[in-house]
Length: 475
Length: 91
Image 1 (cartoon, helix red, strand yellow):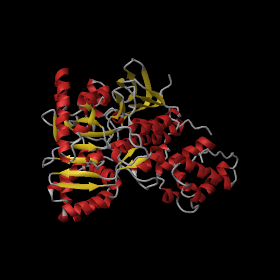
Image 2 (cartoon, rainbow over the protein chains, first blue to last red):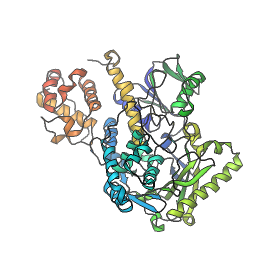
Image 3 (tube, chains in turn cyan, blue):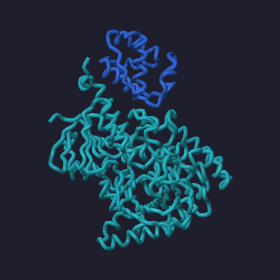
């Protein structure tokens, strides 16, 4: 069989975007997904007749159509998609809650600025300078020394409570590093959450993915579901293909892997993993999430925010807990509190808290089932204590843990945000094997798609346009 | 293709790669990059479409000739003179 121009591992957001992008340039692409559903960390499932999204709370990076220089505009452009195809509904407002303080924010940055001025009058000048520094920061895919985001925040702000309030969303929506985030990542997150904004696709992640899948079906991309990769084939220096779990071998000039750095190195074999993976490459952060189905609109219970980022403890701790979960901080998401054309089929509230993967995986089945329910109760009780209590209005609930995340995404340790060490060029120690997705360093749904596009452009599209013989051009 | 048809061809390609943009109001002398925020990757898309639709090869060092609509016409007309216009973007 003729080798592909590229094999893309994983039909999540980055893999789908990479494959679509390459198809526009007439590349022969095979997109491999080990599950029967696409979406990766942003997939969907149905349980007892309830349709749930896996990871989606909100889409960050919201900007109106044609906003210059914004990641969403670039993603749409590079995939030739129209903004209105995704029918994005903005949040009315969301909240940052730390002990004694609530700050509202919306997609109008002025609201957060005035909230900071109200609650932290002596901090607002520093906050404005911080926002300016974020706006002026030039993002690229080059590797460079990246200072601690927390330390950089402290150069603009002196009140630890305000720093904590800002860090809850910035860390929860993308940091793979405990209690901190690289400054460049913080800039990306700050822009995507506060300066751009939050929205939700009409109908959740399914219709969003359907737009991509429908587009993909119109191309020559060979999309293969239930096709897990057992090994990445290489000669020690250069990758040349993959062996599937079925034993089938596929060859390609280039492999883009969204499996994660450590996971990809393991696919290259024990020697590669030993030689190229350090302890610090392994992520430690995972989450437990509960989804409650309510018999009424959360607004009727007094829950008006689309998203609430909270810490009930100071200082805010964003680290792997020693216990199964840490209920003292988290995110509450209310999908119905985003603008939508049609009312949602069901009223949902999601609560996400930090969890310890290894402890969850050490439980036997009976203890696992019991702890899952008890700790979801505890997490919801704490979340409900700071907004409104929805427990009596709950008619159904599903809970997933680091064990579930690991099983369905294949990410070691159930690490949603991957390795703490990001590799912005996408390069790995194996030539021809590149990373895309969370371990390359872009964040969120739009960020993941941006990553797929950027890596496809850099390692396949422009790499071959410089060698005219391989473009297959006919003149 | 006449020079006027080259304008139609280039606007059609821009509409294909940037479906959110209204190409009818594009100024012919102002840089495209400034009007609709095209970056260097987007120019690669334009060049790719020129090759797919018309078999026209634009080497990387000539991308700068495509900065404006007028620039596109001067540079592309000799390459496209004996080609038929295809319009592909959905209106």
